[in-house]
Image (cartoon, rainbow, N blue to C red):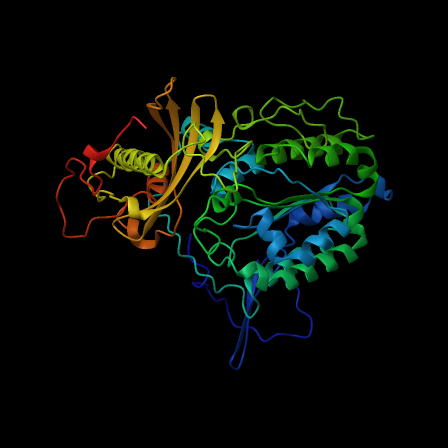
Length: 494
């Protein structure tokens, strides 16, 4: 795969008044100092055959439903409302149902795409590849350039392409997936900048009546911001990154039959796995005339079509949401820190717990690096109490409490969020009985800090956010952990 800026020129041809581009996916126009690259919607032989077949259908009700999937990277539901309120209002005016409890699989695009588009966890995807004896592409790079959208911005280029596509295939059933990563992934403020172009795109889409009549439209985001402007010094940023946006619109004839279930589900716990199950359900609707789901396979406990009423007792544990990324039924106290089981916690006890949890999480972070294949390439992490950004209890079940600690680490700049289960002993003297790591995530950009790992494996991709590479001339082997925390000051009895 080569970057888009390394295009190959065919023989230069003067442009006639009318030019038919049948098979080319893109072409470049140059006139004096003007340069423009345009994408085409290829009309390959098999595509033309499909279009001819469906154009023969006279009764539009006999056409299967099309599916239009639209997405934006790194946008939470709250961020949608803050930065694009007019677009959100227009979505609702167009008949989209907003899902208030849409929970991401984790704060990464790949995990959520695997769930929504394939219905698989990352572990299941890797298993399927191993069963087929796949080979790794060790020369796969990431620098493909962002200059391929010509004089338009990338989002406007893509939204215009979507409008051209739906117009061309208005009489042909399709499934179209468009996801905008640039510039939203790295620039949190860009959603506000593009809110008006996005609203304009939605207005043009609404004006296309044939698309509205026969297309099921899903607009969703993958996760919220975790490394940019919205990564604030409070627990609210932790909650927001795991709460993306989801809006679904059904055509009128389907809406009459399924709106009640859709509206009910909009207030229930929903995951990307449910999007995949919904897509399977839509395939079944297209297969069976009369829109009956009698032959639809139903839904396992971990996922369900959103066109069918969801169970009210869904939680992370029975819907394939990893515990380390679960915010279902989380506690969000506005004033109390809720450090320990007693409401009469002293400041000294709170500081002691901070020290204990920080020592534990830094130790686990270094264990994670040591257990990896890159242990000799990565430096040790260290931290101090002064580098704690916030500490918050987010779940409580009897004597078992879960805390999230957000802290800075050296080599700088690095920030992590660690989730720990603390089991308290019984009795009047509050003691920490045990500590259990739930998960650790990086919460700021790591850039070239992990240059020594590359993209050679799934483990490598995972470890990139936990590795700060040694200098190129450092060939020393990893030694036992040393860091700034003085473990002799740790007091498990609080």
